[in-house]
Amino acid sequence: MLQSRAAIALIAAVIGLTIAGCSQESTTAIYPSADLRPPALVAAGPVDARRVLLRFDEEISPVPGSCAVEPQAELSCFAQDKDLTVAFASDQSPGVDYALAGEVDDRDGNRTRFFLRFTGWNDRAPHLLISEVQTGKNASKTKPHRDFIEFEVLEDGNVGGEEVSWASSVKSATYRFPGIEVRKGDFLVLHLAPEGLPEEVDELGGDLSASGGVDATSTGRDLWCSTMPLPDESGAVSLSLRPGESPMDGLFYASEDKSGALSSDKLETILSGLAAAGAWPLSLSANPAWEDGFKWKSSTARSICRSGPGKGPGYWYVTAAGGQTPGAANSGPEPLASANATPEGPASESLERASAKAFRAGAYSAAFIRASISCLGKAPTFCEATCPPLKTIRVGIEMMLNSAASSDSASTFTFPTTTLPL
Ligand SMILES: [Ca+2]
Ligand SMILES: [Ca+2]
Image 1 (cartoon, rainbow, N blue to C red):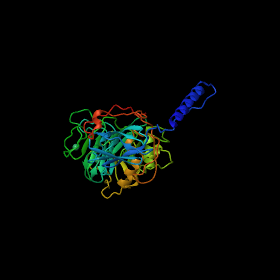
Image 2 (image 1 turned 180 degrees about the horizontal axis):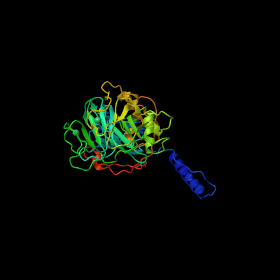
Image 3 (image 1 turned 90 degrees about the horizontal axis):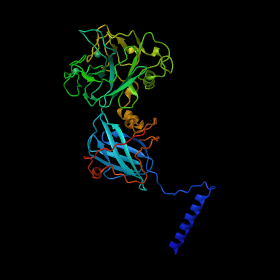
Image 4 (image 1 turned 180 degrees about the vertical axis):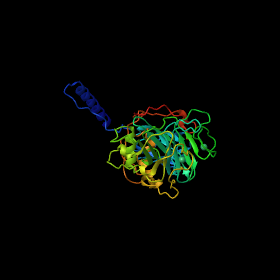
C-alpha cells in the first residue's frame, strides 16, 4: 500500500514537474538534495622527508591503489577526517621534482583525482651567502671570465631545492640546486653564460675538478645554467632556502648613473621580495629605488664581491681589474667575515619554522595551488585557500587511472596526461 502511494506521489510529482516545465511562468528549478560535489583540495605539500599531506574540504577516504608518484617510490595512503597523508617508505630526495597522483572519495562516493607537483623535502638545507658575481663576459683572452654567481656555504648540509633567482628590468630566471652534499666553507659557482662546451659539467659528486670551461676551478663546485646571463650593469639576485620561500639573501647592484624609483618591472618585483624578507634594506622609502642598490661603474673586468655577512650595499665592493676569485675566498680589501656569522633576518629562522611557512604558502605545489596564502601558525596547520578545481574532477564517475594502478604496488604506474588549470 505504501509502495503504491509512493508510486502515485511520484507520478503526481512527475506530472507536476512536466506541467511546470511547460509553464512559461515557472522559474523554480528542483534539485535533489543529495551530495553530488566531489571533495576539493584546499592545501597540499610535504611536511617532512616521508610525508605529503593533502587537505580537502570534506571528509575523505583514499581509493585503494590509486596513489602513485614519479620518480617511483613505495607509498602508503591513509586518511583522517579531511586530511590525506601520503607516506613514503624512504626519504624523498632533496630538491627532486616529484609528481604525485591519486584519488579520494567523499562519504557519498563522489571521487576526486588529484595531481600535483612538489619538491623533495630537504631538512638539511644549509644557509648560503652570495659571495661574488661576475656580471658579464670580459675582454681578456688570457684571463677570460663570464657571468657567474658564487655562493659560500655557511654550514654542512644538502643544497637540493634551494633556489636562486636573478633579474633585469625586463627578464628574470630561477635556478634550483640539485641535491648535493656540501660542507661549511665550500664555494659553489653557478655559471650563467656557458659556451656549450662538453667539459662544462655539473659537479654533483665528490670530484671538484670534473668541470672545465671558463671560471671552473678545482676548489669550487661548478654548476652550469644557460637560461639567462646576469645583467651587465644593473640587476638583482635572490636566494631562497626552499622553493617559494622568502629569500634569505640577496644582492641589488645598480649602475651609478641610475636614480629615482624603480619602475614596476621584474627588477622591482625581486627587490620588493628581498626588502620584505629583510634580505636587502631599502633606505629611502617603502618602494625600491636605484639609490638602494650597490652603486658601481659597470665593468666586466671586475667582479662584485661580498665583504661580510650583513645585508645591503655596505657589505659589497668592486674588485681590482682581474681580481675575480670564482670558487675561492674573495681577495678584496676586507675578508669575507662569515666564519662566525650569524645569519640575519629570515635566515636565522629554524628550519622547522621556515619549512612550515613554505608548506603553508603552498610553495611545494605551486603548479597546483595558485592562491597566495599567508597564514601564521605551526605546521601541519593548513590554511584555507581557494584552489582552482582540477579539470580531471568528475562527479560520481568511476575513474581508475589505469589497470596497473589498481594494484597495491605503485611501481608500474604511469601518469595519465592531466591538464591543470591555468
Ligand atoms: Ca670545480
Ligand atoms: Ca670568490
